[in-house]
Amino acid sequence: MENKKENKNIDFYIEEIRTAAEEFHINETRPLSYFIRTFGCQQNDNDSEISAGLLEHLGLEAASQIEEADIVIFNTCSVRENADRRFYGHLGNLKTWRSEEKQRRIGVMGCMPGQGTHNKHLKDTFPYIDFLLNAGDMGNLPRALYESRDQSGKHFIVDLTDQPKEMTYPSLPVKRESRHRALISIMSGCNNFCTYCIVPYARGRESSRDPQVIIAEAQAAVDNGAKEIMLIGQNVNSYGNDKRRKGESGFPSFAQLLKEIAQIPDLSVLRYMTSHPKDLSDELIEVIGQYETIEPHVHLPLQSGSTRLLKKMNRRYTAEHYLGLVQKLRAARPEITISTDIIVGFPGETEEDFEATLGLMEAVKFDRAFTFIYSPRSGTPAAEWEQNASDVEIQERFERLLDLQNTHSLESNKTCLDKSIYVLVSGRSKTDEEVFSGRTKDDRLVNFSVPDVSQLENEYAYTARGEAVTTVISEGSEVLVKVTKSKTTSLEGVFERLL
Ligand code: SAH
Ligand code: SF4
Ligand code: F3S
View 1: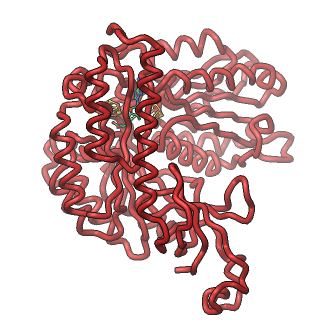
View 2 (view 1 turned 90 degrees about the horizontal axis):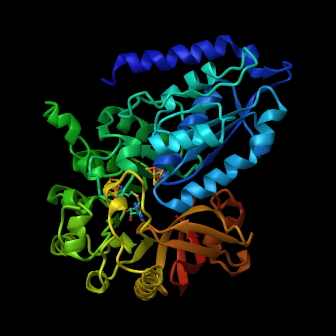
């Protein structure tokens, strides 16, 4: 049902590149290599995984360092100013690198190139870029590579950001970053136009992917060993609205899709994000309460606890509505944890508005929160609005917010102390080889150590095949951990047994 034309286009360019393969091989001794640097959210992470899958499908190989690659792709984010700055720094560093070898290419995709001001700035300031693609437009990556082949010796920028932004693709090759977790995009774009946010301009309008394609991808991920699936979209709760509006009345709701995927045998944890409070339906809350596999966690961005400010943000819910949702969620799934996003210093935020946010935080007691200082984004309505609080005041509010949240996060993590909890292992700790990291079903970060095999009950010290458990724990292992310490952002514990 995804239209055949898009499909044919991708195949066409893949074929063209394949037949022009010699041009992509250096001296016939090695294939070209690529490196993708990703900024931003899970949506970009997933787009990068698909880009990597496509590039490998074309015969390219992953390089381990950016400077060692022939093709460097930046997958950009522009949600706040610091994301922009980091990326421009990286790009500036590659000027000499780009000029050193004829086959080298620099591509920029993600949320920046499709915005007029960024597009112009990129072209004017970094003329050595080779191609520009819209966010989520991986299907045009083969074409971008193909068209940016340097045949004339003259440099030019292939700019494919004039392509429609409402792009959803059928299944494309994917090279997943993680073995235990599969990110699966269920829709692209956003229709909400929160007045501070650049995403709808960068990613276009909502477009839902075919449920059968999504279910097949989820099944394939589990068949390949994924224990966890994360369904992603800017507002997953409005999944299918675009299709139903166009007359596809039978198109499933997000709740129906979630229910279907939750029933895939051997799937341990089903995650999803992001939920917009205005669209979190009773039907969805019921499904969250019914299926064990669905994570007992919801990420429900509040942004502000002041209804006055929520209105200016165009969030289209009130503080009371938000509180009502929290109550319903906790009634349906008592063990559920709730995380949120909060913005401090939105234009016009008064001390009273800010205190309303603190009040709502007290009322909800979020288990975790991502807190941001408002960053004006050119092209959004709020960027034109006056700021009445000073930077110092905003910083001070931010710290008060953080202090309160830290208290709540710690309180929440303390409820796990001395309990034996399920942990899905993501790998070894970066700082300590003897320590493993993972997440609980309710999305808490856990670092745990494994006691000496001699200290484990014999039945837990060795697997059925006689291997010491310490040697078999790896990414994707499911284990029971006894929590020994609760911290603000993580738990510490000791391994009990494999599950
Ligand atoms: N679609 C998601 C999140 C998108 S961006 C949602 O609606 O929740 C992730 C978070 O970045 C937002 O929830 C918001 O808290 C923050 N954010 C977005 N634009 C911002 C801006 N201009 N300044 C500061 N924070 C911003
Ligand atoms: Fe941005 Fe709002 Fe859309 Fe989230 S829902 S991506 S905050 S416009
Ligand atoms: Fe950033 Fe785009 Fe995601 S702006 S947060 S990468 S949708």
